[in-house]
Length: 199
Image 1 (cartoon, rainbow, N blue to C red):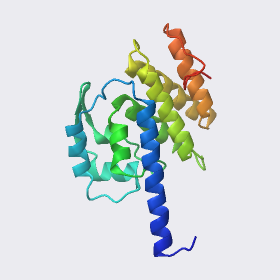
Image 2: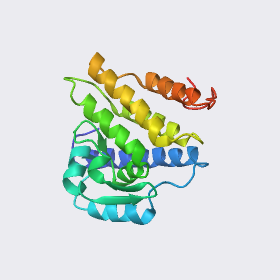
Image 3: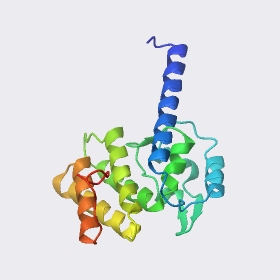
Image 4: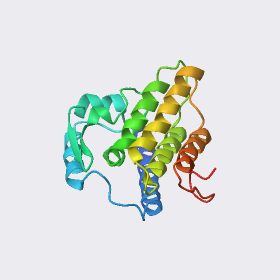
Protein backbone atom coordinates (compact mmCIF):
# COMPACT_ATOMS: atom_id res chain seq x y z
CA UNK A 1 0.00 0.00 0.00
CA UNK A 2 1.34 3.42 -0.95
CA UNK A 3 2.49 5.71 1.85
CA UNK A 4 0.31 8.62 0.83
CA UNK A 5 -2.78 10.30 2.25
CA UNK A 6 -5.19 7.76 0.68
CA UNK A 7 -3.09 4.84 1.91
CA UNK A 8 -2.95 6.21 5.45
CA UNK A 9 -6.70 6.91 5.44
CA UNK A 10 -7.39 3.35 4.28
CA UNK A 11 -5.14 1.96 7.02
CA UNK A 12 -6.94 4.10 9.62
CA UNK A 13 -10.36 3.01 8.33
CA UNK A 14 -9.29 -0.65 8.35
CA UNK A 15 -8.03 -0.33 11.93
CA UNK A 16 -11.31 1.34 13.00
CA UNK A 17 -13.26 -1.50 11.38
CA UNK A 18 -11.09 -4.13 13.13
CA UNK A 19 -11.53 -2.33 16.47
CA UNK A 20 -15.33 -2.29 16.05
CA UNK A 21 -15.27 -6.00 15.17
CA UNK A 22 -13.21 -6.74 18.31
CA UNK A 23 -15.61 -4.72 20.45
CA UNK A 24 -18.65 -6.50 18.98
CA UNK A 25 -17.00 -9.88 19.59
CA UNK A 26 -16.25 -8.84 23.18
CA UNK A 27 -19.84 -7.73 23.71
CA UNK A 28 -21.18 -11.03 22.35
CA UNK A 29 -18.74 -12.96 24.51
CA UNK A 30 -19.78 -10.99 27.58
CA UNK A 31 -23.49 -11.23 26.84
CA UNK A 32 -24.31 -12.86 30.17
CA UNK A 33 -22.32 -10.48 32.35
CA UNK A 34 -23.97 -8.20 34.87
CA UNK A 35 -24.22 -4.47 34.48
CA UNK A 36 -20.90 -2.63 34.40
CA UNK A 37 -19.85 -0.69 37.48
CA UNK A 38 -19.75 2.66 35.63
CA UNK A 39 -22.87 4.32 34.21
CA UNK A 40 -23.29 5.42 30.61
CA UNK A 41 -23.73 9.04 31.81
CA UNK A 42 -20.32 8.95 33.53
CA UNK A 43 -18.76 7.55 30.35
CA UNK A 44 -20.38 10.27 28.22
CA UNK A 45 -18.86 12.91 30.52
CA UNK A 46 -15.46 11.27 30.16
CA UNK A 47 -15.69 11.09 26.38
CA UNK A 48 -16.56 14.81 26.34
CA UNK A 49 -13.42 15.47 28.42
CA UNK A 50 -11.38 13.56 25.80
CA UNK A 51 -12.70 15.48 22.77
CA UNK A 52 -9.49 17.50 22.40
CA UNK A 53 -7.37 14.34 22.26
CA UNK A 54 -6.49 12.71 18.94
CA UNK A 55 -6.51 8.92 18.80
CA UNK A 56 -4.77 6.56 19.02
CA UNK A 57 -3.64 7.92 22.37
CA UNK A 58 -1.30 6.53 24.99
CA UNK A 59 -2.16 6.20 28.66
CA UNK A 60 0.17 9.11 29.34
CA UNK A 61 -1.73 11.32 26.86
CA UNK A 62 -5.08 10.32 28.37
CA UNK A 63 -3.83 11.25 31.84
CA UNK A 64 -2.45 14.57 30.58
CA UNK A 65 -5.83 15.42 29.01
CA UNK A 66 -8.30 14.05 31.57
CA UNK A 67 -6.31 12.61 34.48
CA UNK A 68 -8.14 14.69 37.10
CA UNK A 69 -11.55 13.80 35.67
CA UNK A 70 -13.47 11.64 38.14
CA UNK A 71 -15.74 8.80 37.11
CA UNK A 72 -18.43 7.63 39.53
CA UNK A 73 -19.23 3.94 39.80
CA UNK A 74 -21.13 1.61 42.08
CA UNK A 75 -17.80 1.01 43.86
CA UNK A 76 -17.03 4.70 44.45
CA UNK A 77 -15.32 7.44 42.49
CA UNK A 78 -12.14 6.94 40.48
CA UNK A 79 -9.86 9.51 38.91
CA UNK A 80 -8.93 8.70 35.32
CA UNK A 81 -5.26 8.88 36.35
CA UNK A 82 -5.88 5.90 38.67
CA UNK A 83 -7.07 3.70 35.79
CA UNK A 84 -4.52 4.36 33.02
CA UNK A 85 -0.75 3.86 32.96
CA UNK A 86 1.44 6.93 33.01
CA UNK A 87 3.43 5.38 30.18
CA UNK A 88 3.59 5.30 26.40
CA UNK A 89 3.69 1.49 26.26
CA UNK A 90 -0.09 1.07 25.94
CA UNK A 91 -2.27 2.97 23.50
CA UNK A 92 -6.03 3.21 22.97
CA UNK A 93 -7.52 3.41 19.47
CA UNK A 94 -10.66 5.40 20.23
CA UNK A 95 -12.74 6.88 23.07
CA UNK A 96 -14.70 3.59 23.09
CA UNK A 97 -11.51 1.74 24.12
CA UNK A 98 -11.03 4.23 26.95
CA UNK A 99 -14.64 3.71 28.06
CA UNK A 100 -14.18 -0.06 27.98
CA UNK A 101 -11.26 0.24 30.41
CA UNK A 102 -13.14 2.65 32.69
CA UNK A 103 -16.18 0.36 32.93
CA UNK A 104 -14.13 -2.03 35.07
CA UNK A 105 -12.18 0.07 37.62
CA UNK A 106 -10.54 -2.97 39.28
CA UNK A 107 -9.28 -4.14 35.88
CA UNK A 108 -8.11 -0.61 35.03
CA UNK A 109 -6.09 -0.32 38.24
CA UNK A 110 -4.53 -3.74 37.63
CA UNK A 111 -3.59 -2.95 34.03
CA UNK A 112 -2.13 0.41 35.10
CA UNK A 113 0.13 -1.33 37.63
CA UNK A 114 1.22 -4.04 35.17
CA UNK A 115 1.97 -1.65 32.30
CA UNK A 116 3.84 0.80 34.53
CA UNK A 117 5.93 -2.08 35.93
CA UNK A 118 6.66 -3.37 32.40
CA UNK A 119 7.65 0.14 31.30
CA UNK A 120 10.51 0.10 33.84
CA UNK A 121 12.22 -2.73 31.95
CA UNK A 122 14.66 -1.71 29.22
CA UNK A 123 13.73 -3.00 25.76
CA UNK A 124 10.75 -4.98 27.07
CA UNK A 125 8.32 -6.11 24.39
CA UNK A 126 4.78 -6.00 25.76
CA UNK A 127 2.67 -5.99 22.62
CA UNK A 128 -0.97 -5.36 21.94
CA UNK A 129 -2.01 -9.03 21.96
CA UNK A 130 -0.32 -9.54 25.33
CA UNK A 131 -2.07 -6.42 26.71
CA UNK A 132 -5.39 -7.78 25.48
CA UNK A 133 -4.76 -11.23 26.97
CA UNK A 134 -3.82 -9.77 30.36
CA UNK A 135 -6.89 -7.55 30.39
CA UNK A 136 -9.12 -10.43 29.34
CA UNK A 137 -7.72 -12.57 32.18
CA UNK A 138 -8.40 -9.81 34.71
CA UNK A 139 -11.92 -9.36 33.34
CA UNK A 140 -12.60 -13.11 33.47
CA UNK A 141 -11.37 -13.23 37.06
CA UNK A 142 -13.62 -10.33 38.05
CA UNK A 143 -16.62 -12.07 36.44
CA UNK A 144 -16.42 -15.18 38.65
CA UNK A 145 -19.58 -15.16 40.78
CA UNK A 146 -18.99 -15.14 44.50
CA UNK A 147 -15.45 -13.81 44.35
CA UNK A 148 -14.44 -10.39 45.55
CA UNK A 149 -13.35 -9.24 42.10
CA UNK A 150 -11.17 -6.47 43.49
CA UNK A 151 -9.27 -8.92 45.68
CA UNK A 152 -8.79 -11.53 42.95
CA UNK A 153 -7.71 -9.01 40.33
CA UNK A 154 -5.44 -7.24 42.84
CA UNK A 155 -3.86 -10.55 43.93
CA UNK A 156 -2.99 -11.59 40.37
CA UNK A 157 -1.77 -8.08 39.51
CA UNK A 158 0.44 -8.18 42.65
CA UNK A 159 1.94 -11.44 41.38
CA UNK A 160 2.58 -10.02 37.89
CA UNK A 161 4.27 -6.89 39.28
CA UNK A 162 6.40 -9.01 41.65
CA UNK A 163 7.46 -11.21 38.70
CA UNK A 164 8.42 -8.14 36.68
CA UNK A 165 10.55 -6.76 39.51
CA UNK A 166 12.14 -10.06 40.56
CA UNK A 167 12.68 -11.73 37.16
CA UNK A 168 13.06 -8.53 35.12
CA UNK A 169 10.59 -9.79 32.51
CA UNK A 170 6.82 -9.72 32.01
CA UNK A 171 5.21 -13.13 32.58
CA UNK A 172 3.49 -14.76 29.62
CA UNK A 173 -0.24 -14.42 29.17
CA UNK A 174 -0.73 -18.16 29.73
CA UNK A 175 1.05 -17.83 33.09
CA UNK A 176 -1.32 -15.03 34.07
CA UNK A 177 -4.31 -17.19 33.09
CA UNK A 178 -2.94 -20.07 35.17
CA UNK A 179 -2.39 -17.78 38.18
CA UNK A 180 -5.96 -16.42 37.88
CA UNK A 181 -7.37 -19.96 37.58
CA UNK A 182 -5.38 -21.06 40.63
CA UNK A 183 -6.81 -18.13 42.61
CA UNK A 184 -10.34 -19.20 41.61
CA UNK A 185 -9.75 -22.81 42.63
CA UNK A 186 -8.12 -21.78 45.92
CA UNK A 187 -11.30 -19.85 46.68
CA UNK A 188 -13.65 -22.74 45.89
CA UNK A 189 -14.63 -21.92 42.31
CA UNK A 190 -14.35 -24.41 39.49
CA UNK A 191 -12.68 -23.32 36.27
CA UNK A 192 -13.85 -25.32 33.27
CA UNK A 193 -11.53 -26.22 30.40
CA UNK A 194 -13.73 -24.38 27.88
CA UNK A 195 -13.38 -21.07 29.76
CA UNK A 196 -10.73 -18.43 29.14
CA UNK A 197 -9.00 -19.25 32.43
CA UNK A 198 -9.20 -22.99 31.81
CA UNK A 199 -5.60 -23.58 30.74
